[in-house]
Image 1 (cartoon, rainbow, N blue to C red):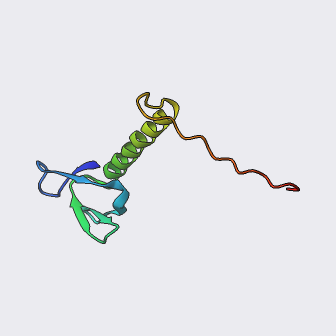
Image 2: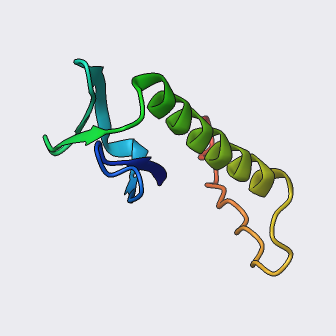
Image 3: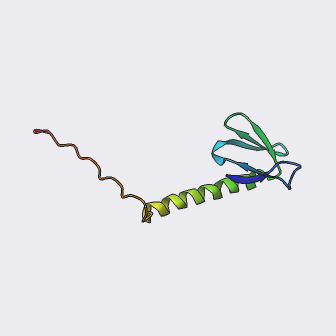
Length: 90
């Protein structure tokens, strides 16, 4: 989730799933349209919202890469892939 602030309510945080953001417009206030059609009016400008989404995705991808290269020692090992026997002549 990214943390934003509703327009006119800067003291109240609003947590938004960035994967649901479809568009970010400035007309002149920043309006975020979500995948379900809902619109949010936020205090941040579009560049700030885009930067928050980018930073969120960097953290997610970095965590995935870290897990790929440094697996959790407490987790079970990945199963060995099943190999199908080849038929003669193939």
